[in-house]
Image 1 (spheres, rainbow, N blue to C red):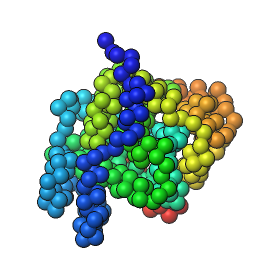
Image 2: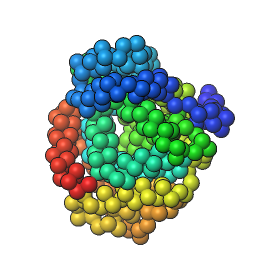
Image 3: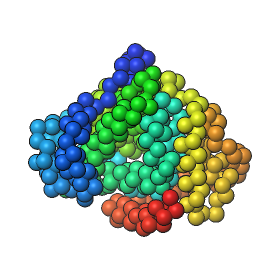
Image 4: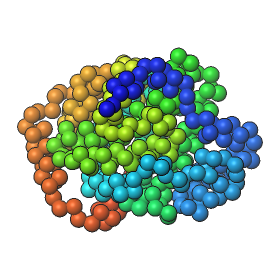
Length: 355
């Protein structure tokens, strides 16, 4: 029996004042010494892999979150994670599109949390690079062997965890942060972001006509639960099932979603990017209309995403084609993943140039 008050305002108010103590302590220690800081920066820019992770552990001994970076939580189910990776490989192209059309703008509506992105200016000033980095992260953690001994997921997640701590450090040092927003990249905002990459993606797939089984949904969300845990998200903010995930999404949305100038500016940067790299026959109105449909009128209005409603016949066609895609034989997972990821990487020089 699920306790319906599991995610209370009191709990989430406390979570807004909690971040990631271990990573924050590490950043304070490293940033107090220019030589150590340079060492960390070099490591962050290096290639991923088990050996590379060992270099960090050797350079900075005694930090538990680094030493334990490759340890899965006790509740992780490798079989379920494999199923989730197969699901991603099968739908990778549309899932990556949904990140831009749905997941990211959904996050921008959490006005207090979005201030971090706004103040750091990364999304506004280097939109394409930041979006490309986010996409690479998703590809890396969703690979068929991502969490194997030689997989790159553990290190990619650790890099993001350290980067979040560095962004928190600089944001608080800047003097521009208002304590009424909670702390930058706090636990509630981390939980909301994790849901936008898991639960919200599944919601988007279904809205587009894809057939998603309960098992596939559970498996895909399970990988993101593991990613959340390894990223420093508190376990009491990692939902055990879809129903709890829906409850957490509902209360965070009610607490955090509001119209903000910076949320709208972030959404504008994102839509400008999406329209500038669009090579399909879809018009700007088609793309923005699809975003409005996926986000829902209320959220899209908050973000100032304006376009005529997507005509019903276009929506029906999209849904029918996608349903048929869902029913196709799956093929070889690794091959599907590698082909799709290689095609994505090929876009990089052009994307960065445009950005």
